Length: 507
Image (cartoon, rainbow, N blue to C red; front, side, top):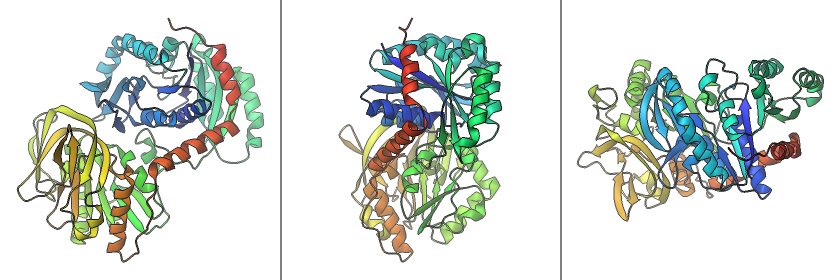
């Protein structure tokens, strides 16, 4: 029978996703075939499985921590917000529909049977499953139709460990209040608490831990310190909280425009890991002044974010950066915005709208969503400062609902290798300083990233760096560091005991 445990949180962004990855790594190191599982994820950071299915990035990096390939069953429901009230619903890796919050809340009970079947299929293949909740299990207004917190724990018949973030303050109130709002049978499932993101001397917490254990009857299994471990974040909460705010100076300054509906900002983790790079996420137009490279990232609402660029003054700042000969890169939605025209008769019904006019391209939104992993080769029409990247092989993935065509004389950036054929992707501006592509994950390709950065160094009169950071090995080291810290600060033996004690056959 499969061992299982579920991490739930006292709130969003308490560190559940990272701790799930850490447990996946620990169980993998201990020789257990392990997989993550999150029944429903709301996020704009998504990725593509080897068979072309879309799922949340958090479960992808958790699968990597477990040493396995991502499988859409690990995240059967993905909600991708398109506005404050609307979200695209992705079921088992494919777009199903778009709904507002109330409609989806009414729809959720229909998904229970499918979720349980998917979970059971994973349980039949793996020795250990680490489940993740969403937000807080104490959202009492949503409890009757819950499929991701206690509702999921009941379906899986698994114990729960509650994660609380001490860095935001009020940790003991959060623990006590969460447990107090649970129904008795739900509270009985909570077998331990992990206090996360602690800075300071843990001895200062001992009296508080003793009191909260006495008040709740639930043991504290460990206190995790604030870790400087470079792992992916589930969604834009981390951007809003300023986690990615960088003040240190580096040789190369890269400004990523923080769009209101930014998607897949995990594209830039590999850039931020480079020793000579500072990556900044910016909303102030003046923040582009010192950038060596400006990036327009992906967006889940391309036309809405394009309007924001103009209204906020960011579009003007981008044009000023162009006049200063600062290179500009657009990825996915950002690529679409850089073109001359965007025609949308699918999502907004706005028809043809002018883009920023940097690239000679026209984008038509379509009903069909492209979701695929791809290999590609950099084209030969690159400018002199980027010539070392010509012909390099890269890999990544596509997630988009638009088709972009180049005008005559506009060279592609890449050739994608699909079913034995070369398919052009992306575009290069006439002056060789602006580029666009649909390829996410481009910077995970070490040789290309170093060629790009050395080209930027050359433009600044700096000597190139010889060695490329091996990003895959870098991520592996981060997983191992996380696992080591969790073994040191959390009673992993007690977690094993909890899992074995509550090991039950699925109904």
